[in-house]
Image 1 (cartoon, one colour):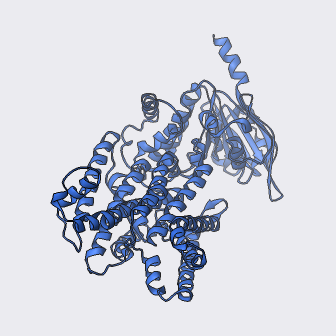
Image 2: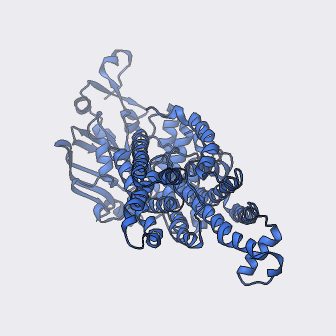
Image 3: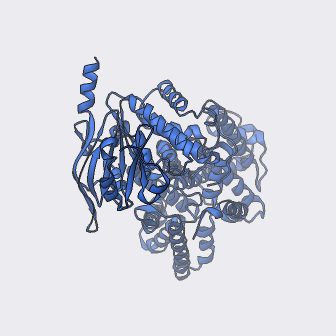
Length: 355
Length: 276
C-alpha cells in the first residue's frame, strides 16, 4: 500500500509531542469558549472557569456571561473534544483491525446502525413513562446495540475463507449504511411533525444539546473506551503484516478482535446517541495522524484522540458562528472538509484494489 | 560435555505422528509422520497439492482439527498456549506485505513484541539479528521501499529475533521463502539457515527447487498425495527411481561438487553424467 508517511515519532520524543498537543488543546478550549454570539474575552473566560472551580475573581464578568460559558459553551466544547477523539480513535482502530485504510465507522454503516436504533427508541420509547429523563441514559445503550449489530453483520458478510475481504466489507457496509439511513428517514416521517429537523440532527450531527450530564456520560462511554483501546496497540501493529503472521508472533488476535469491535461499537454508538452521525472524522483524522507521525499504533491512537477532538471542536465552533444566530450541522462542515481529502486518498490507493 | 549435548539433540525434536487432515471429505494429509531434529535443516518437498502447506500449518499450530499428535520436545502442541508457542517456533512466509507503511526496523521488532522482557534485552537481540542478516544499511528505510531480497532479509530477522534465545530448542518454519529471489540471494538466505541451525534451532523448509534442498538440507521429507514417501538424508533420497516416481517425471542424478544434482531426463544428452 503506497500510502504516504512523512514522519515518524521516535520513542523519546513522544512526551514532547504529547505536551505540545495538550497546550494546543487548552488554547483551543479557551479560544472556542470566547467565540460566539455573546462576547467573552480571554481573561473573563479564565476567570469564570477559575471561579467555578473555587477561585476568586467574580468581579471580572457578568452573571450572564458565566451562565453562557459554563452551562452551554464549556460542556459543548468538552463533548466536541471527547466525541471527535472517540470517532477518530475508532476509525483508526477499525482501519488497523480490518487491515483496510478506507474503513470509517460512518462509511461501513456502524454510525447509521446506531442512529437507526436511537431513532427507533426515540419514536417507540415516547410512550414510556418518564421517557424524557430515561432516554438520556438508555439511548446510548440502545445505540451501542445498533452499532454492534452492524459491525458484526458487516464483518461476517465480508468474510471470504475466514478472512475479511476488503471489497465485500465496503460493499456490505455501504449497503447496510444506505438501508439504515433510509429506515431512519422512514421512521421519522411517520413519527412526528418535527421529523425533518430531527432527521437532520441524526444524519448530519449536532452538538447543540450539550450539557454537563451528557459530557459526563460521554466521558465514561466514549473517552474511557477510546483510551482503553490503546491496550491493544501491539496486536494492531502486528496485524499490519497479516492476521496469520500476527498469530504466529504470539498476538491473541481473536480475543483482541472481539474486544475492539465491542469497544468501537460502544464509542460510535454513544457518540451517535449524544450528537448524531458525524461523518468522516473517523477517516480523515487517523490518516492525517498516520501521515504526520507514522503508523505505530500507540502513536496513531493517542494522536487520533487528540487531533480528532481538536478537529471536531474547530468544526463545531465554525458551525456555531458562521450562520449565527442559526447553526450549521457539524456533519456538513466535516464532510465539506473531508470529502476532497477522501478523494485524494482514493486516488492514492485505487491501483491497489480490484473490485 | 559434548557427549551430553549430542544425546540431547537426539531426543529434542518436533515429532508428528499419524497426522491426518481432511476438509469437506477431501483427504489432504493421510497418517503423516515427520520429525524435525534440533540443529538440522529438514526440507519438505513434493508436487503442487501434495499437502506441504497443510502439513506446515498443522505443525505450526495454525490448523486445529487434525488427527494424530504433534509433539514439541515431548510436549503436545495442543497444550501450548499462543505465547509459549511463539517462543518455540517462528514462521517465515513466502511474502509479507504491510498494510500501512512502517520502518523496516519496526517490522523486525514485532518479533519480540509479545514477550515480557526489558527493553535493553530486546534491543540487544534485535541488533544481533540485524547483524546476522546484514540488514544494517536499510533498517531505517520504509519496508515498502525495499527490494524483494531486502524485504525477505527483514522478515528473516523478524522470525530469528522471535526464537533467538530460549531454554528449549526452537524451530523455524519457512514456506517457500526464496521463490521470488534471484539466485545469489537464494543461496545467501540458505547459507544463513546453516548458521541459524547451530543455535539450538531446528529448521523446516518447504522448497520447490530440489537441487537447493539436496545441497542445503540434512534431511528431506517427500510428500505425495498427502502421504510421506520418505524422510532421509540427501545421499539416500537422491535416487532416480524414487524421485521420478514422486514427481511423475523421469529424472537423473548427477554429481556436482560432491553433492547429488538432479536433472530432468530429457536434457541428459547435453550433460556429461558423472559416476553414480
